[in-house]
Length: 142
Image 1: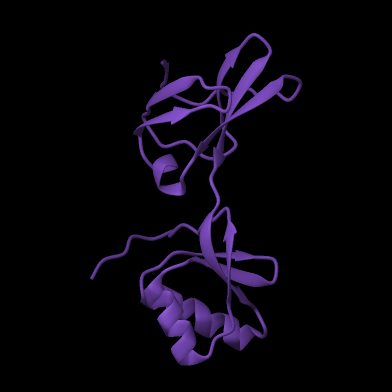
Image 2: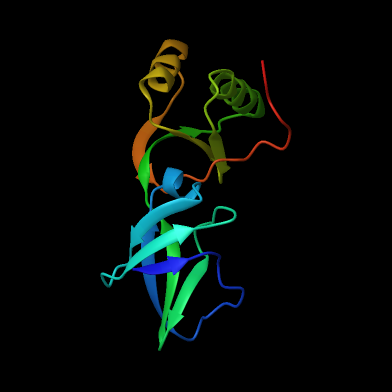
């Protein structure tokens, strides 16, 4: 097993890229294990979590890069500014993270969110996608 303590600081575009696919929640951790597409095992003991796209190891012509796994999400089309604000507020009020991407909102597929959308008659469709939610810029507590 190869131990990784930090991302590499230099991009390696001219090399053969090998992906290490991890779930979103795993990438948020400091200690975890991963398996590269070519079967090489990696252990991560990090000072701070890494992100999808980070290069973590270089050997010969291979550059190992993190990739985030797709997950079940709900996609809500943004039909108007008022609808976008209302939907964003409703999702946030349930303390679920969301992503705003070209023309729609993404939120993780969860029964509570589905129930909300069905009750409010909010248009949505279920699909699988890489989900990278917005991060809070201020602390939050109750």
